[in-house]
Image 1 (cartoon, rainbow, N blue to C red):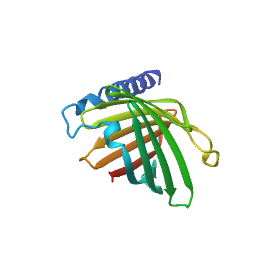
Image 2 (cartoon, rainbow, N blue to C red):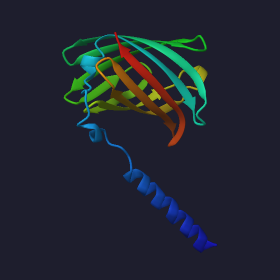
Image 3 (spheres, rainbow, N blue to C red):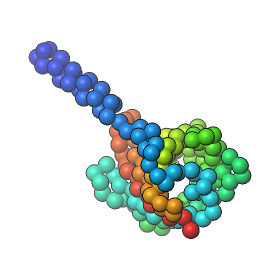
Length: 177
């Protein structure tokens, strides 16, 4: 019995280590074009459409978002207005600071700061999002990836987790006006 337990634990540890070795890095996209620069893409008006899927893959919400974006040097503001399929609206205003290929972002429902790293056509954000009280008020870890498709189109995929368990996937496609 102890021997079986030992082998099970060993297999779980090895699987975890191998999974960690297989993760994708932002720098894997270094040679991809067109280059993603937030201050260039998110400048002016940008529209977005997307879905939220639960951990089983079922679409539980849909959204349309309009973003008014302005930059003053390396300081940017992304003023997002969400219209959800359930009739609710939501507003998020990002304050972003650009430092080379790295970004620091703040918003009212972001706990602390969002840290972003860009390489090639890709940006990866990591941050903690405080859900609204009607959604439990939980603090969720957000692993947010963006890929620039062409000069006007950006794809975004976010994994929402808590205690290492995936709760939702968010997919948004943006189109620059």
